[in-house]
Length: 292
Length: 303
Image (tube, rainbow over all chains, first blue to last red; front, side):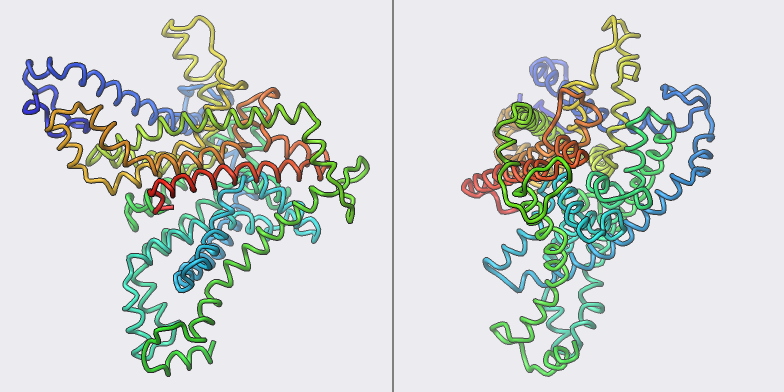
């Protein structure tokens, strides 16, 4: 039996069609199980992604009702989106928030990743804990704490509040991505640069940064995407003038199933597809999947 | 900066112990993150704790300078809030168990696959993880609603007579939450599996183990740390679930997070803050217990 079992058993390209009939009968129970397993994984894949495909399709519908498949194709809802000052404002707010978050999270995450390994021991563990902790606190709790606290200084509903909220989640991720990149970097290179007389700044920009370039890029990209998609904290700390696209989409959803939300969803998905594709090209899909 | 530069340039060789300029450098490098986390996280959370200990008042959101445990007493005495807490924890357990099961199977399939199939499975998960929650939940709403794609297909195929209720109830809540936790679950198991030699499975197969037995006895023990980390995170996120319950649940499926927002919008700040504090403590205790268990098992080196 062991001889007739294909080497790629359990993989995706099992040559069961070519297997001898006798062997197939012997492993028949396992083969059924294998196909059931594959069908299950396929179902999970479809469960996660098919709804998004459906939404993208409905954004091109001619009618206002969200039916699938859409009856007739048109770009009229895209025209409506571009003509809406509310949505244009939200798109601008999203870009401002994502830009601010990218800068803050990448700088704070990178500097901390560079400095933390020098601490060692319990102080390093303390900084690591502080850096990661906000990721583990429920978004609603962070959102309400920022709302209540910043309200004392009339800072709620400002861009500062939105960027601070987004950075709470973007910074730990940028931090861990840069730390992972630094772990593959040979610190002796930097020491050599310093010994040769380079200033710490020059050593960073000319020796360290080029070597961890893809990590820095991935960190910035992840910070940008986190900001673009975050909405629970934003729901609490943003106002009519600063609310981002996901918040406006959420508000529209509470009313009815608005075809404009399909358009916005499609644009957000397209932005993420581009970001993931660029990230995969620069840092590799495997690392994008395992470092965050 | 300049004095640090001068000293670093002038030093003859690397000292074995951190010299004063090295300490300065470390402090400067850590300052942005520590300062930011203090200002945007530690102090606001401390303030929230302080608010939770203020007197409740009907006239205003917050009576400053008062001390009282009324907010917490209200949590204990209100049967509604007790029900909300119990429901939230049960919901988080169900969502976590489903996510661990489905996520591990998916991660295993992605790990065993090769070439294009692996790329598609991984890209799908990364895509789903990076897609805005609002979009995922909106999409689920469109697909699973009584007049949605799933029900249309089920009714058309004659499998069911009338559309199934898949949203605005507990099923919808769990469906929605899976979109939140499943991608992270898959990735945390997958990242653990990447360090396992695939030839071990082939060896098990060659020795006569069925694929299912090889997966159970060779791969599963190795996947446990990833499943534990993913499961603990899935529980934390589900216990704090807000979006899925608010959009895909109904009024009878209140979670603690939704109740926090309800109390905030009705300006009951001390009660909202007390709810937040208790929720955070529950989540952090479960996290700490999970990570502690993992470390005792000796597999928690990747946390």
